[in-house]
Length: 318
Image 1 (cartoon, helix red, strand yellow):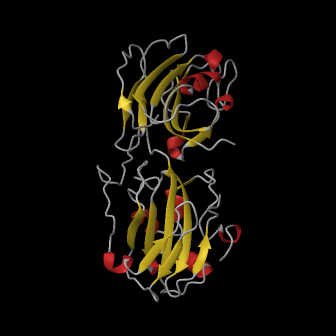
Image 2: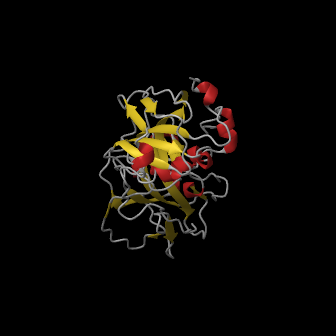
Image 3: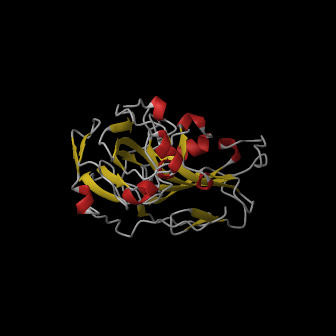
């Protein structure tokens, strides 16, 4: 079997405007345990989910359409959007011979965090097969030729019309957006937060002077682990300078950011510390707890900063 380092490219791991953004998963995020039993009965997956799977394939397996089955079903967060961050292990096998082709290390490392979309660049079939799959699941997938990008298939030694079998172990799934319970805040004189269907927030800035002290409001209260500073925290955020009409930065335009509490301005760190995963936080940061009298890119000197922050998960500690 090819080593992980040799197969990195094949596996696709090269490393205040309110925009519409909807989640493709259904409201209840239901998925069939088996999508096509006739195909999936030809594939037998065994072994501990912490280790590389053992796979027996009734060969030659040739399928004209994607099929999948949940070998194990986890109880964690569900994958609901291709842009969601995940940690997965993958093992690939030839449909023609049943022989292993390539696999990730299966070494328990949870630091290899990528959006689902990065995997689907080389394996388009993963998008459907992993939709609504939950953290802790093991998913067996029969990949039709069209479910594998042509160059990736060639790199794996697959012929143009060959099928393949993939086993995906879903190690960790980050939230797509804050999913905590709505909290009451009086909000007098504070910016208002509105949300698109996919959870992306927008800020409606009030007129008048900003608060002179650090002001933190928990808009949604999650029930996940607490942010203590011992582990990096993965967040989506949008930042606006008080008095400006547009955001100066938003992770929603790219992907969630990994932050340490000692790597951000003091007001941002104070807004995060003690919060829980799944929470959404609104914070108004006075200049002395932000960038002070220093201009920072498009942010004027002595700016009061406003952030709305979604806490999506905790990264593995360095």
